[in-house]
Length: 413
Image 1 (cartoon, rainbow, N blue to C red):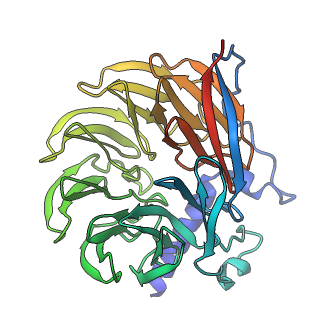
Image 2: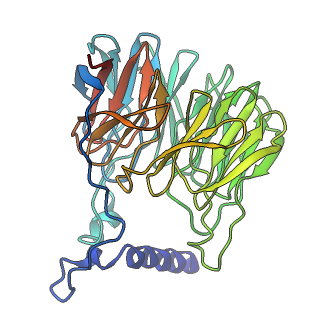
Image 3: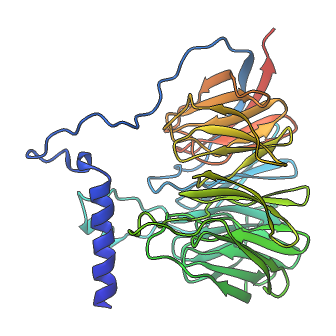
């Protein structure tokens, strides 16, 4: 047991040192570091060709906290449901913003360890860590303690809760008879949709050092698809958990554990019999959906979800360059580096646009055809991190401070 703690402390120190001396800049004997090479790109002015208008905006709890959580909202019929990281879940009419119901799924627990590490850690008692999954009349969320909680989509009342042994960092997927959850220890679980009882599980090998995140399971053709921290993507039968195929997106390379991080944290993108997946410090690959055969690959590093539209795949790499690739053969259509190192959200493509948010709270609208800037709007709210949603031409985004907004985009005459 002591070895485990010793190793954990070693990697904590290593990550702190890698983050740069600026972490300790409050100490009087530490000099201010030189200007970072990878500073966020300055926003350039351009003539807007679209107008971004706010249709309505509502507050959801106390926001997403300081743990880099991405609790994406979910659209269910005429409702949009969002959660904060402190246990508040609220449902709004997605056309008017009128509150339908709100509930709590627990209270933040005080953490003595976190408090004892002051001033070397930022106290954040948020515990909701896995975004909202939905289907068959229920909503499902995950927590840092490994709880999976199911609520009624109609009124927010609790249906059941169960434990999957490790924190849940992405949205569960809801099928006809089971709920599928990936926990941070590399376990994919199939839970009974009525009771939460575990029906099957699959354990993947987790490397010594990984990103703090995980791929969300996705359902298609009676199979569950997901990516793992070991750089692999796999398909499983919904009912039994039997593995149908497995494909490596990236093989770990390098001598250090940091160099060997190859997490597939983005949710696989499925369309037209193809599956697209990207790994950190690795590659983007197009796989044949039925058997996982690689059709093409491209060197890139990404931990975000992919976007698609115009028969193109949109990827935001670790340096926040946005690239559009032809789905069929990975031909580069365009590349936009004007938002480099601004900590972008996953890209969302709809109509003629690709939209991304950044850590300063700006929403950016690009053209799907060539990647040029078409519009920009300052949303504020402590920045944008979660995936955005679109329905009936309305764009929905949740800011880091918990502001849920419905936006429309129109051409400028």
